[in-house]
Image 1: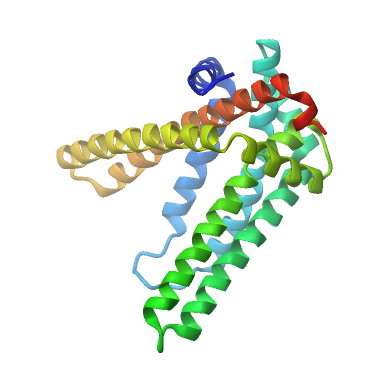
Image 2: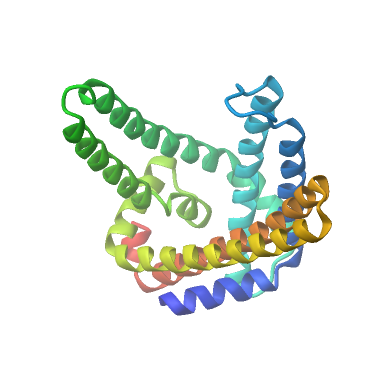
Length: 256
């Protein structure tokens, strides 16, 4: 399936998946409210233990949501229908594997960040421009590596391969379809940006009319959670559609 077809399919799947979008919305809304409650009220305040616990819980829960969303989107695209049990079943089945993939990818990106920071710290005082150029190059390489590993969770859910094979197959898949992956990503980013601007305008108008900070913050949490739930699943369904199209066209390359 091509770029436009994948995006159209992703939107149609998201638009017809109210139960999953609702689950994602409730999850996001609850954590938004918790964040508003425990977030520091003054700048430069170190995170509290409650914030750290909430942050870890959010990350672990997000992996569950990701695993469930991918399995649901896969079945919806393949079979034309899926129940919420597919979401929970996929989340339970692939949770550990996607968590491991997430930790590995985070560690790789973290290594690039630390390397760039080390270069700036070592050369920043004596060769500031050179340090920035090297750090910029390291950042670009890190972003490229992140893109190469993008399909690892999708391969885990579709092929149920070991973690190492998911990573290596993702590199092969993205390298063979790099410009398509980048173009889809840019289109989805543009859509998300436009929707974000609209939300900002709506919240801004309401805040002027209501002039009540708590009401405005709750409204923003509600709208952002609703939009993020739909857009998040829309993105997942779009790339799942794209991957399944590649798998159907070249199974020998992707599944080897």
